Amino acid sequence: MAKQKTQFVCSNCGYVSQRYMGRCPSCGAWGTLVEEVIQPEKADRKSRVNLAGEIAQVQKLTEVNVEETPRVLTDLQEFNRVLGGGVVPGSMVLIGGDPGIGKSTLLLQVSGQLAQAGTVLYVSGEESASQIKLRAERLGVQPEADFYLFPETDMSRIRKAIDETKPDYVIIDSIQTMQQPDVQSAVGSVAQIRETTAELLQIAKTNGITIFIVGHVTKEGAIAGPKILEHMVDTVLYFEGDNQRAYRLLRAVKNRFGSTNELGIFEMNQEGLVEVANPSDVFLEERLESASGSAVVVAMEGTRPIMVEVQALITPTVFGNAQRTAAGIDRNRVSVLMAVLEKRASLLLQNQDAYIRAAGGVRLDEPAIDLAIAVAIASSYKDLGTKSTDAFIGEIGLTGEIRRVPRMLERITEAEKMGFQRVFVPKSVASDLAGKTSIQIVPVETLADALKLVI
Image (tube, rainbow, N blue to C red; front, side):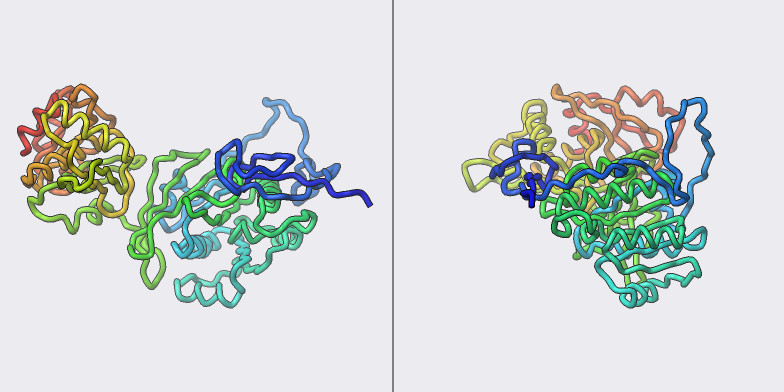
């Protein structure tokens, strides 16, 4: 009997090595190389065969028939928004998140709604059919004639079930529990995840079936398995939040059919996930009046303006080196802004500890939040409160100038709708906004000018 050939594959990035190494040379992770048996390639393994037995053929671009297929809308408008306007038929969507965050709850609710427009096959490798039925009753999912449950992990049986039911939508919960019988590797290994995802991708693209995949995440917050898993699918969504908060954030990090900047907000309760139509109310409802170290920014998440409170706490450092801690905001951005404040606004911050956070658990990563962060830091440093009716929009350059950001009118309209009285904006855009809104526009050219008017 011939000796089996093995190789070592990094479970983090998919790097392949012929010998074991403690550290992956590709991603730099330690202890991630896992041994797996090299599987012989099958002659017809690469052919795309649909459920009718037809094999993909070479075609000229002019001969390809394009049928305009409308997106399928669910009852959850936040879910439609993150997908770019609805579910694209024949697409493959990967949803990742921490355990217990609500991934299965979200997909079960969406499955019940999609079953009204087509056939749904819900494949679960983690729960029995009775457990799924109990959860569906608790969530109020209406039983439909075309909603099928299949508690199975064997991909050969799952492929047979898809051939028999011919569904329009397939939910795989989760991809780490699925296994290919032909692959001599443990369930959840790199080889198993790669092969099962490849077969599901073939099923989706050759038959026009929309497939949703649930993916576990590692302790670093990335989807478990090689990065090839994210490269193969059409859309990657991350479900964020924690068990101590009722709100969940659904964010797109990859989308071939829409924007990757969209954000969906849900609230978890006894009846499942309920969408939040106006997130600005959520992020501002517990803000204190005239509190020091507080500033409100109008951030853009995709096509939606969201008002978020930026909080800062500046205290004298006890140790030799000052600490810079940030939650929901890039710590490097905070360090740069504090350096600009010290150089251009004459604030002595080098011996001050700084704790910055975006209230409500949202993550802000656009340049328009710079002015609000700087105002919050200066307010806390001087222990002087800011007006609760002021909002701040603008990017700060290294020379202290306030620079313009896109979609100013939409941001200001959101601030006006939320009852704010003044908005601080870059001076370069003030003339473009004249007469377009009733809210007071305060143009500022430099960071020092803005601090003089606010504090």
